[in-house]
Image 1 (cartoon, helix red, strand yellow):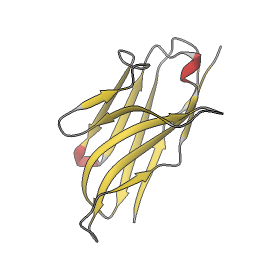
Image 2: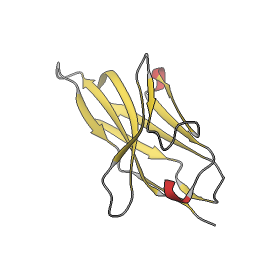
Image 3: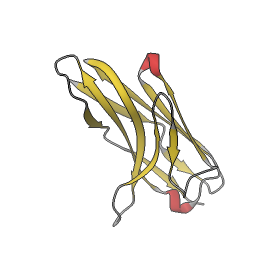
Image 4: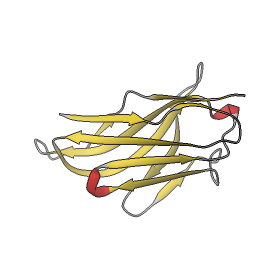
Length: 120
């Protein structure tokens, strides 16, 4: 079984910074990609950033402010969020495309989410 656990959310003032972390654990054979999504009340879940062994990609709304990184050896992904705006307020979810030891296919796993609130 594979689990993703996020941490690092909280309340921050506009212009501030937060760093989210996500740890993948369990029967992991290989991770193809890891990413961050977010969902605000009344809105659909949207991609924030994604990272593979070769590439990173960001939504236009966070480019230049957020940075995604990973520690492959530790099966962790991070999201450094700077210059936060009230519109960044959302529940942030980690996901990962993982092949476990029991199968040959990759499956998408999700964390439980962590709340980020940007408010003065």
